[in-house]
Image (cartoon, rainbow, N blue to C red; front, side, top):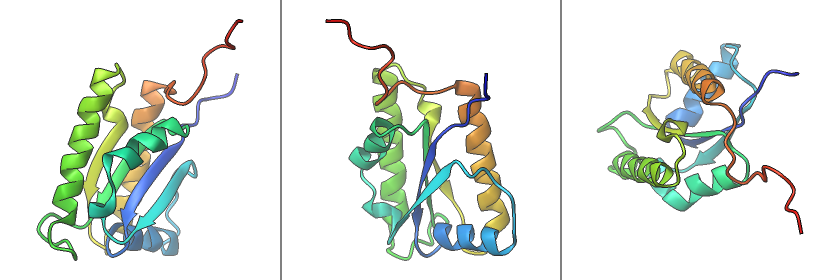
Length: 143
């Protein structure tokens, strides 16, 4: 039996989080290859439907990574994203799924090491939670 490798989707702002991910790569830092990064102009562009759709498409965990609080390049995009992440956490609770599967992180472009830590932190958290059933059929439907 193989060990569960979670599928994690990361919504990253272009200016800070994506730049930090790029820096982590340039620094040759090792982190889980199971994370798929979606580059956004700003985390303020991510909506609750995007986060839920990631789960529906098979993600076991999702995180949003944006600029440091108070330093958003689009003024308040990261605070709007934080509210949306909190809303999705409440939605997950309503459908009896662990709200810890979705998180929001803030970092600067110079925090490549922190980006790698975030990926590992999310990977370990989701591994402990196990796979999610959203978007995955548990058993064949009997007709």
